[in-house]
Image (tube, rainbow, N blue to C red; front, side):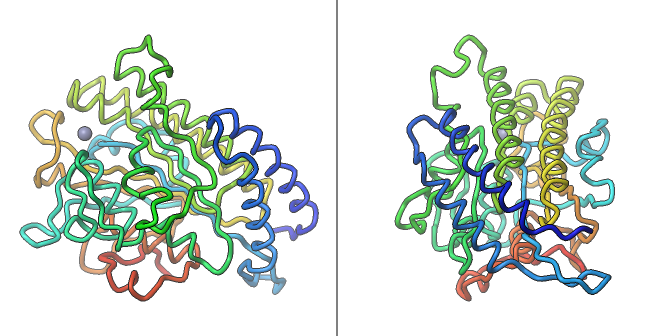
Length: 362
Ligand SMILES: [Zn+2]
């Protein structure tokens, strides 16, 4: 590994300035200028607070941990394992792939419906429905006492930049209570969402095609931001596969949808790889997962507690990801995994409430 400090920092500053212009284009009228200030703050924090790791040759180098997690909606484990997915394969080559579960513990207070918002919230808070209080995709009243991972990011002593690139706007405005005092009052530094609620976005398409177009747009903006600004912690959420599952169930259309979203993962992974080449001090954790499986009968439904609905999967670029001793990995293990990789300090109150444990081995 080469040690470069000065020139990449100069390069980063000019790129940060550039992306503000780019972001203004897709989030009309929102916080122009602020991301630049925050980014510069984060940059300075990286200089002063970066973790120092010793290399084999004994030379110390500053490393900045970065995490990208991606949720692709409603893809059963048996489907992701059967369909040809070169995008995910490229991430897990040299990395890892685990089956995992959602839905909490069967018959216990933690048992949680296998529906989307519940799955996202279990990942985001590292807890199940009995704590985060999300049990459906509508009428949601999250319990913000269980801090989401982005709130934790914003409470570090160092500045941590955050990004959200999402086909479903409610992820930000409701699940994480963006800007709400009860949820901590923080805002994301980089946001690409709102398209699902924008009547002007691709109005000629039918509902399923329109969501697919939004997925593509969100991916494009995410890849651009990852490459140019590399937020420290980013979430990409894509919905298309769940729409096809509900409409067509198991079969060729679902397989094609999975292959399509796999190409989006390729887009994101390419951006991370390009970033790694340009900023050699960055240590990237990439996690790809899904929020629930589907019914065994025809693959159209989900929400119940059957094995196929409860079984999900976690793909990652790190070879260190393993199932906890004595049980399968669970979606609630992703939060402590990110905490470990990012070297986040957790408030005691938050740490005590977590259900999962880090999947990173020694
Ligand atoms: Zn669904």
